[in-house]
Length: 305
Ligand code: ZN
Image 1: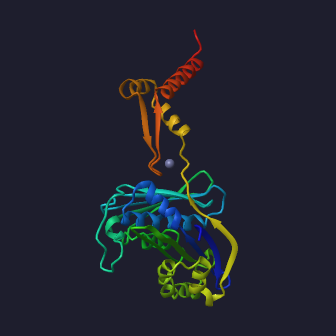
Image 2: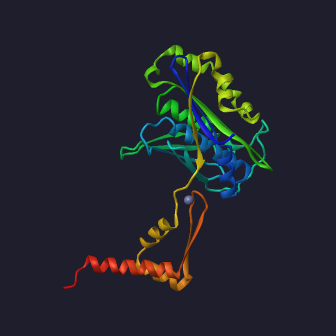
Image 3: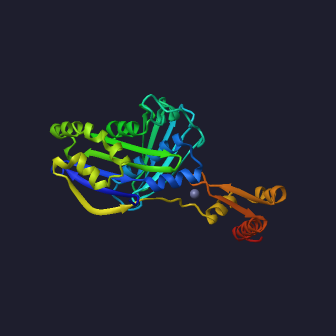
């Protein structure tokens, strides 16, 4: 099944449900960044979380950034996800590997660390981003993002994310988010209903591993609650907006002296995009052109006396 996101409601529009499959994009991130197993799981879970959070935004162009800074060996992690279904992200130390935890699972909690912070920045398209920080609960990502939703957004929510990765790469990755609708957030009966779904929700990772489709998974978790799945299927993908032009723009901002120094010392410049590990190389000609541009611009700005 292609990477995708679907939306649904249950309990007569009282509960909003979103499911996302991110198997291919997590594999793409693994290959681009050379991620270890545990780093793949941490980043995959975070990218699913980012897409799930972004799915709740309204205005075109809206994005969510999730930054996790824990005390574990992974260092830090950043994900940038959009309402348009694009996502990108990286971890600070991609080659950290750890033995499985007591449950025999990839030990994301230890890799991320259980001391630290989760930062969420939402750019909702109005020019002023909304940001919020919560302390980490476990470093397992899913629990931490759920904690953020309950504490910062005060929306009764349940979120589960999972990644299965082995020697053949990523075999399954995805997530599911259940929320009591904002207008009904004080409806105690709905909150209790949501909480009662925890057991069914826990089966999500098994359903994911079995290769079930999103509608099948939602049916299994919410089928008895008047589930209505919206017909629109949104495709999601790993996408980074970086380009050679942007790199040249950044180099230009370093200024004349620095550029001349780069030509003299290194006969060019090299830049790596943190988000997608793409390497860009500017040669002497590129740098000479930037110097010429800068000189022309400064002449235009200061008319001759
Ligand atoms: Zn990039």
